[in-house]
Length: 249
Image (cartoon, rainbow, N blue to C red; front, side):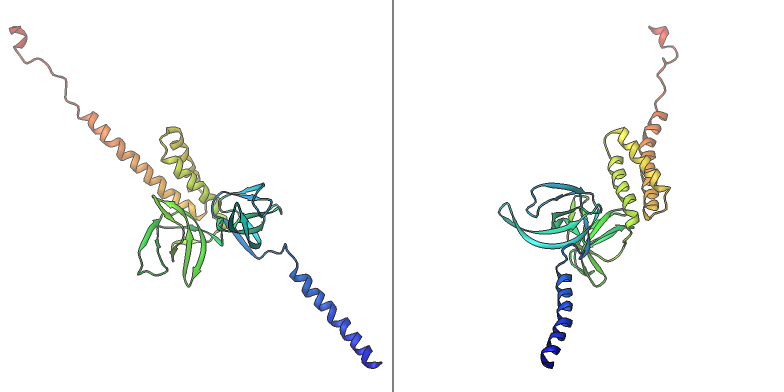
Protein backbone atom coordinates (compact mmCIF):
# COMPACT_ATOMS: atom_id res chain seq x y z
CA UNK A 1 0.00 0.00 0.00
CA UNK A 2 2.84 2.34 0.91
CA UNK A 3 4.52 1.65 -2.44
CA UNK A 4 1.35 2.51 -4.34
CA UNK A 5 0.95 5.74 -2.35
CA UNK A 6 4.56 6.78 -2.98
CA UNK A 7 4.18 6.07 -6.70
CA UNK A 8 1.05 8.19 -6.85
CA UNK A 9 2.82 11.09 -5.11
CA UNK A 10 5.79 10.82 -7.49
CA UNK A 11 3.50 10.94 -10.51
CA UNK A 12 1.68 13.97 -9.15
CA UNK A 13 5.02 15.79 -8.88
CA UNK A 14 6.41 14.72 -12.25
CA UNK A 15 3.34 15.22 -14.46
CA UNK A 16 2.85 19.00 -13.85
CA UNK A 17 6.52 19.64 -14.65
CA UNK A 18 6.17 17.63 -17.84
CA UNK A 19 3.02 19.52 -18.78
CA UNK A 20 4.81 22.87 -18.26
CA UNK A 21 7.66 21.86 -20.54
CA UNK A 22 5.22 20.69 -23.18
CA UNK A 23 3.23 23.93 -22.92
CA UNK A 24 6.38 26.03 -23.30
CA UNK A 25 7.29 24.21 -26.49
CA UNK A 26 3.87 24.79 -27.99
CA UNK A 27 3.85 28.61 -27.87
CA UNK A 28 3.80 29.54 -31.59
CA UNK A 29 3.86 33.31 -31.01
CA UNK A 30 7.12 33.55 -29.11
CA UNK A 31 9.69 35.64 -30.99
CA UNK A 32 12.76 33.72 -32.12
CA UNK A 33 14.71 36.70 -33.44
CA UNK A 34 14.42 40.21 -34.87
CA UNK A 35 14.48 40.57 -38.66
CA UNK A 36 14.51 43.55 -41.05
CA UNK A 37 13.11 44.08 -44.55
CA UNK A 38 15.91 44.57 -47.11
CA UNK A 39 13.57 46.68 -49.27
CA UNK A 40 9.82 47.38 -49.56
CA UNK A 41 8.12 43.99 -49.51
CA UNK A 42 4.59 42.66 -49.09
CA UNK A 43 3.52 40.57 -46.11
CA UNK A 44 0.81 37.97 -46.83
CA UNK A 45 -1.92 36.54 -44.63
CA UNK A 46 -1.25 32.89 -45.51
CA UNK A 47 1.96 30.92 -45.79
CA UNK A 48 1.01 30.21 -49.41
CA UNK A 49 1.46 33.99 -49.95
CA UNK A 50 -1.93 34.60 -51.54
CA UNK A 51 -3.57 37.54 -49.74
CA UNK A 52 -1.88 40.89 -49.06
CA UNK A 53 -1.72 41.94 -45.41
CA UNK A 54 0.74 44.84 -45.28
CA UNK A 55 3.86 46.29 -46.90
CA UNK A 56 7.09 46.57 -44.95
CA UNK A 57 9.27 49.61 -45.57
CA UNK A 58 13.00 49.29 -46.20
CA UNK A 59 14.65 48.57 -42.85
CA UNK A 60 11.38 47.98 -40.98
CA UNK A 61 11.75 45.43 -38.20
CA UNK A 62 9.55 42.41 -37.46
CA UNK A 63 9.59 39.58 -34.92
CA UNK A 64 10.46 36.21 -36.43
CA UNK A 65 8.07 33.56 -35.11
CA UNK A 66 9.09 30.63 -37.27
CA UNK A 67 10.30 29.39 -40.65
CA UNK A 68 9.16 26.58 -42.91
CA UNK A 69 9.39 25.36 -46.48
CA UNK A 70 6.22 25.93 -48.52
CA UNK A 71 5.26 25.03 -52.09
CA UNK A 72 4.20 28.28 -53.80
CA UNK A 73 3.17 28.16 -57.47
CA UNK A 74 4.97 24.85 -57.89
CA UNK A 75 8.24 26.03 -56.29
CA UNK A 76 9.59 25.32 -52.81
CA UNK A 77 10.21 28.52 -50.86
CA UNK A 78 11.57 29.27 -47.39
CA UNK A 79 8.80 31.31 -45.76
CA UNK A 80 9.02 33.22 -42.46
CA UNK A 81 6.12 33.73 -40.09
CA UNK A 82 6.47 37.24 -38.66
CA UNK A 83 4.77 39.61 -36.26
CA UNK A 84 4.57 43.28 -37.28
CA UNK A 85 4.82 46.26 -34.92
CA UNK A 86 1.00 46.48 -34.82
CA UNK A 87 0.85 42.80 -33.69
CA UNK A 88 -0.53 41.57 -37.01
CA UNK A 89 0.94 38.20 -37.96
CA UNK A 90 1.73 37.26 -41.54
CA UNK A 91 4.14 35.52 -43.88
CA UNK A 92 7.00 36.72 -46.08
CA UNK A 93 9.65 34.88 -48.13
CA UNK A 94 12.72 34.49 -45.92
CA UNK A 95 15.10 35.84 -48.59
CA UNK A 96 13.60 39.33 -48.19
CA UNK A 97 14.67 39.57 -44.53
CA UNK A 98 18.04 40.37 -42.92
CA UNK A 99 19.50 39.97 -39.44
CA UNK A 100 20.50 43.60 -38.83
CA UNK A 101 20.39 47.11 -40.31
CA UNK A 102 23.65 49.07 -40.63
CA UNK A 103 24.50 52.57 -41.87
CA UNK A 104 27.79 53.19 -43.68
CA UNK A 105 29.58 56.23 -42.24
CA UNK A 106 32.39 56.26 -44.83
CA UNK A 107 33.26 54.68 -48.16
CA UNK A 108 33.81 50.96 -47.60
CA UNK A 109 35.15 48.24 -49.87
CA UNK A 110 32.94 45.19 -50.39
CA UNK A 111 35.04 42.05 -50.76
CA UNK A 112 34.09 38.79 -52.47
CA UNK A 113 35.15 36.77 -49.42
CA UNK A 114 35.89 37.73 -45.78
CA UNK A 115 39.60 38.43 -46.27
CA UNK A 116 41.59 41.44 -47.49
CA UNK A 117 43.39 39.22 -49.99
CA UNK A 118 40.33 38.66 -52.15
CA UNK A 119 38.87 40.79 -54.95
CA UNK A 120 36.88 43.96 -54.24
CA UNK A 121 33.41 43.75 -55.75
CA UNK A 122 32.63 47.45 -55.32
CA UNK A 123 32.81 50.48 -53.05
CA UNK A 124 29.85 51.34 -50.84
CA UNK A 125 29.33 55.14 -50.47
CA UNK A 126 28.93 56.84 -47.10
CA UNK A 127 25.28 57.21 -46.07
CA UNK A 128 24.22 53.90 -47.63
CA UNK A 129 21.78 51.64 -45.78
CA UNK A 130 22.99 48.04 -45.60
CA UNK A 131 21.67 44.77 -44.24
CA UNK A 132 23.64 42.04 -42.50
CA UNK A 133 22.86 38.56 -43.84
CA UNK A 134 25.85 36.72 -42.34
CA UNK A 135 28.79 37.12 -39.97
CA UNK A 136 32.27 35.65 -39.62
CA UNK A 137 34.79 36.88 -37.05
CA UNK A 138 35.05 40.69 -37.53
CA UNK A 139 33.44 40.55 -41.00
CA UNK A 140 29.78 40.95 -41.94
CA UNK A 141 28.13 39.75 -45.14
CA UNK A 142 25.87 42.46 -46.52
CA UNK A 143 23.03 43.10 -48.89
CA UNK A 144 23.08 46.63 -50.35
CA UNK A 145 21.41 46.39 -53.74
CA UNK A 146 22.69 48.15 -56.83
CA UNK A 147 25.56 50.59 -56.22
CA UNK A 148 27.03 52.54 -59.15
CA UNK A 149 25.83 49.87 -61.55
CA UNK A 150 27.13 46.94 -59.46
CA UNK A 151 24.95 44.57 -57.42
CA UNK A 152 26.20 43.99 -53.88
CA UNK A 153 24.12 41.20 -52.35
CA UNK A 154 26.37 38.74 -50.47
CA UNK A 155 29.73 40.51 -50.23
CA UNK A 156 31.78 41.18 -47.09
CA UNK A 157 32.88 44.32 -45.23
CA UNK A 158 34.86 44.80 -42.03
CA UNK A 159 34.74 48.54 -41.32
CA UNK A 160 33.05 51.87 -41.97
CA UNK A 161 29.57 51.20 -40.60
CA UNK A 162 27.46 51.51 -37.46
CA UNK A 163 24.34 49.74 -36.25
CA UNK A 164 22.15 52.69 -35.28
CA UNK A 165 18.37 52.18 -35.65
CA UNK A 166 17.80 55.84 -34.73
CA UNK A 167 19.74 56.94 -37.83
CA UNK A 168 17.66 54.80 -40.19
CA UNK A 169 15.02 57.49 -40.81
CA UNK A 170 17.70 60.06 -41.69
CA UNK A 171 19.47 57.51 -43.90
CA UNK A 172 16.24 56.93 -45.83
CA UNK A 173 15.88 60.69 -46.24
CA UNK A 174 19.47 60.93 -47.44
CA UNK A 175 18.89 58.27 -50.12
CA UNK A 176 15.80 60.15 -51.32
CA UNK A 177 17.71 63.45 -51.38
CA UNK A 178 20.48 61.92 -53.49
CA UNK A 179 17.96 60.59 -56.02
CA UNK A 180 16.33 64.02 -56.30
CA UNK A 181 19.62 65.92 -56.54
CA UNK A 182 20.66 64.11 -59.73
CA UNK A 183 17.25 64.37 -61.37
CA UNK A 184 16.88 66.03 -64.75
CA UNK A 185 14.07 68.12 -63.28
CA UNK A 186 15.18 71.45 -61.81
CA UNK A 187 12.41 71.46 -59.17
CA UNK A 188 13.42 67.98 -57.99
CA UNK A 189 17.09 68.94 -57.81
CA UNK A 190 16.16 71.94 -55.70
CA UNK A 191 14.04 69.74 -53.39
CA UNK A 192 16.96 67.34 -53.06
CA UNK A 193 19.33 70.10 -51.96
CA UNK A 194 16.75 71.40 -49.50
CA UNK A 195 16.44 67.94 -47.97
CA UNK A 196 20.23 67.65 -47.72
CA UNK A 197 20.34 71.03 -45.98
CA UNK A 198 17.71 69.86 -43.50
CA UNK A 199 19.61 66.63 -42.79
CA UNK A 200 22.91 68.47 -42.41
CA UNK A 201 21.46 70.39 -39.47
CA UNK A 202 20.65 67.22 -37.52
CA UNK A 203 22.69 65.31 -34.94
CA UNK A 204 22.74 61.75 -36.33
CA UNK A 205 25.64 60.13 -38.18
CA UNK A 206 23.99 61.22 -41.43
CA UNK A 207 24.34 64.96 -40.65
CA UNK A 208 28.06 65.20 -41.47
CA UNK A 209 27.63 63.01 -44.55
CA UNK A 210 24.85 65.31 -45.79
CA UNK A 211 27.01 68.40 -45.19
CA UNK A 212 29.84 66.95 -47.28
CA UNK A 213 27.49 65.95 -50.09
CA UNK A 214 25.88 69.40 -50.10
CA UNK A 215 29.30 71.05 -50.31
CA UNK A 216 30.23 68.71 -53.17
CA UNK A 217 27.06 69.59 -55.10
CA UNK A 218 27.54 73.33 -54.54
CA UNK A 219 31.16 73.17 -55.73
CA UNK A 220 30.12 71.23 -58.82
CA UNK A 221 27.45 73.83 -59.59
CA UNK A 222 29.94 76.69 -59.21
CA UNK A 223 32.44 75.00 -61.52
CA UNK A 224 29.72 74.47 -64.10
CA UNK A 225 28.74 78.14 -64.02
CA UNK A 226 32.31 79.50 -64.04
CA UNK A 227 33.18 78.69 -67.70
CA UNK A 228 29.94 80.30 -68.89
CA UNK A 229 30.68 83.51 -66.98
CA UNK A 230 34.27 83.48 -68.28
CA UNK A 231 33.10 83.11 -71.87
CA UNK A 232 30.69 86.02 -71.51
CA UNK A 233 33.48 88.21 -70.14
CA UNK A 234 35.80 87.40 -73.05
CA UNK A 235 33.46 88.30 -75.91
CA UNK A 236 35.26 90.20 -78.67
CA UNK A 237 34.36 93.91 -78.94
CA UNK A 238 32.03 94.88 -81.78
CA UNK A 239 33.86 95.64 -85.04
CA UNK A 240 34.08 99.29 -86.14
CA UNK A 241 34.99 100.70 -89.49
CA UNK A 242 38.67 101.46 -89.90
CA UNK A 243 39.62 105.16 -90.33
CA UNK A 244 39.14 106.37 -93.89
CA UNK A 245 37.04 103.39 -95.02
CA UNK A 246 33.78 105.36 -95.07
CA UNK A 247 35.35 107.93 -97.39
CA UNK A 248 36.14 105.30 -99.96
CA UNK A 249 32.57 104.02 -100.11
